Image (cartoon, rainbow, N blue to C red; front, side, top):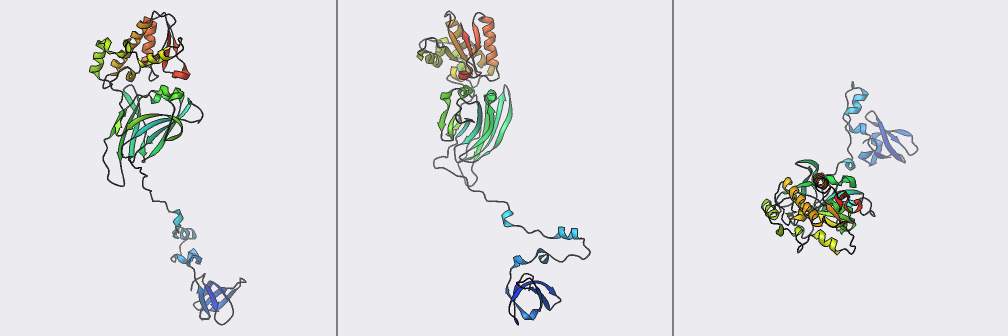
Length: 367
């Protein structure tokens, strides 16, 4: 018999709950009115027992008589509730049929749903495949890079990296993305490590038409490819031989021939407004069809050469307005253009182009 057991009297009507013992042969039984009735052990029988009704002090081993009350309390074993145990179960990664090729995207999502173009952005890394991705993202400035984010992205998920204001977008103009893909639960086809140096055209974030619907977000966003179908996007690399040949052969450059105008010139000519400014995109990837390995100084020289060619072509058209799109970046190209305008063409007027349309990445020249 134990304290907490329910018993019934053998020689009398009724029963109760055992609350204690007196000696070896007498048990104290509390009846339904709360009175303790001393009864011989042989005159009661247990009808119900429940270990959870036993006070904790009855479950603990006997303490030394000399132990202090505080020490006795510390020595008592703590009961562990199963509900308090940490969860160790991890669900298997969700996979999609036909998603075995690596696809990674970098997305700029407006914080406010109805604000396009946006003033504040949430930057996401999107993993659209059945592989885990261990990633590191660096932001580059000139010849050095600083780690911005690193971690692991589960299959078919997206991760919010940070929130940024439009004034700080230029920090993300030259990201470097490195990634390693793998599967945990089963064997898989190995993928090559990813090393993608990028130059993002962030002027898109200032243009409403650049925001598009995607399966990753409920609002329009500006999404850049990092890896598509296992193939990293082309980084900022220029073929030195191709560039040298293009610089020595003016007729080979479509930007300087009337028969093959640039895309910016075609857009300007297509506009109905004859007073609309001519747009000239000086980004390296817009000037050359092949970008495979040039030094930054060589790229800058070529951009300035295109700028001078356009200025010489239109210098006799008084009132002509030309927008040179150079991007914000670290400001090297912009400073070089303004130096050229002040030294070679002091008679022209120059100013920053419309912020709403071009951000901080363009210069308006009026001849």
